[in-house]
Image (spheres, rainbow over the protein chains, first blue to last red):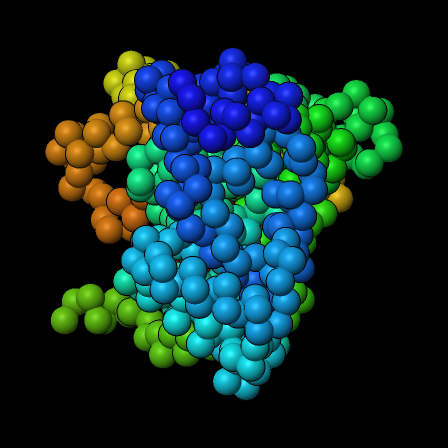
Length: 363
Length: 219
């Protein structure tokens, strides 16, 4: 197998074998058949024939750049980072050298040249409040930009929980009227890669799938790639046996915590969170939140910020005794009132009672 | 409303409503029932050994002679599902956590695999007693809407809880929310259906035992 990517990887000290292994791993991670690994490698190796690299436009909206940080910084210079050699990232404000009108020109040139073919990546939510004035780029609201750029896109990747579900900007009381990409764009295939931030390999996995097959991978009912969001954190967690045995850490520094017991009681949202952290891990497989001793926040689920408190166990209700004293008083009063009514009825029956005499019986 | 919002609602507002109606209903019914009273029995009390309120409370938990043979499904099935419910409700770690959060009381739980088994056995026993109720003409004749309704209210939380743990049919989040929702329905209707026996069973046994004891009848 030859191609510009193989050459460029070789220059960076990555052998063809390593690249093949990486593709095979990626394919198996996405639950694709074994042959897909080779197909992926071939597609990616062949793709960067300078002009043929698929154009990718990355639009940042109401976001913190954490998603970009996740992709670029934490993995550079590993293979995940090198995958970008296989695409033509034509517009990415954080990464591109151009600024101002030059950047805008690059965006419009890419849109024009690759009309109907480019992949649009969005990170950040879209504010609808005050006609979108909360977030503007080049004098246009995010809403306008999204509609304009989405029109010519082949597909859209909603990168991170903000773009996928509204995320933190949408948290109660949602001052900017933030919404997700799928709330606005209805006529394009959208794939959600939620997470705050999402796992880099999930992003590159989806990109590799797109490069290889020219389509988006299979998705769940929330538009997430099933390969990575098919199972809960809880089901794949290495601390799961402790949950089954009923061994829980009660505080962050007790014996249970030191023994690595289950963090359910400390508010872990693993049971209701679909993501690949437990298997793929972070920072090149170094660790992940639960391994570092903190429960899962559920960041890849919609409205995770308002899901009843990070440190409240899932089985714990938010505030169940809110109206209990009122209810108790009302119940007691109702009970007493009914008993008085019953007594009254009894009394009335008693006074209305007519005694039967012998004479009555002989009638 | 997505599944997470659904779960948040049932853990929050939904539970507030259910717990409030439950407490309101329980107090109302207890006041109402225990204030009804009875006419004083002015006859001289007879003293027979084994005839008293306390005797009846215990005796009625044991089948009378010959009854176990005549009606094995009611007794054995009834025992299994009551004990099974107690195990599932009070010895599953997340349930204990909930009780601890509400009352401050806690105790050790059982391994979740054991709870799983208990839930399956409980459901099987409940299905058997239901089929028995449908099959036996007398039982069917005596059954009212309240009986079928109470069975459903009790069965659904066990079924949804088990399905949530087993990841059956629906995603865990939705199933957990449905589980909590069915428990809320149970809480809301418990005071106003025959399920209220959870509160009155021993009181009414004592009452009956006391009245019969006064007459010198050991039942």
